[in-house]
Length: 254
Image 1 (cartoon, rainbow, N blue to C red):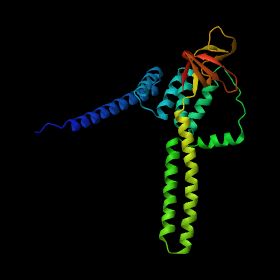
Image 2 (image 1 turned 90 degrees about the vertical axis):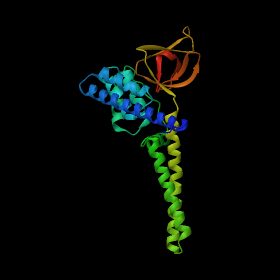
Image 3 (image 1 turned 90 degrees about the horizontal axis):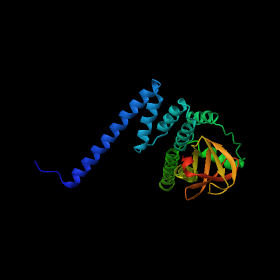
């Protein structure tokens, strides 16, 4: 029997590694779901986090992690994982509902600044679907537009040529806008500009210095916007527009 060529051998090793990884993830997922179903929330959370640390990313996984921590009354961690799940599937009613419930459990009730109506409408519309769905809609509309162009150029019947032209124009127009929605959703997904406060109680400072002026106090579970990053400190902004500095160790990026 001839020995395997080096390239073939490497490919087989890669397939074996992928298969072993997938098999391990499935085993841990089954164990985690079983632990959750019998009320062993700490065990379930540990297994779910093991899967996440291995590089597996899915809204359902993060949602289950959020549920596990919520059941343990660890609301800061629950909010963190619900927020991560929301980034992957912003239109999920279950994720948004559980996140809103978890937010009622934390100390800080911050009234957000009002947003211009058109920005709010745009954001709400983009968040109807995850980025993959928007991308698929864009591709389907573009293909439909091309089919209309084919009908326009190929048909010798005037009515069909008109239908093909206007159909192509409409589909390509819509595909352009869905491409904008997909790009916006992708940008939101990839930008890590938000974090959750993980310290039970932390004082926000006026500058990146422990000796600087105290501004206000935040508690575990509060979401902040990351504005700047200087030597172990983040400049943060909360929903009502207040700005200050927190040490990095007190925050966990979403």
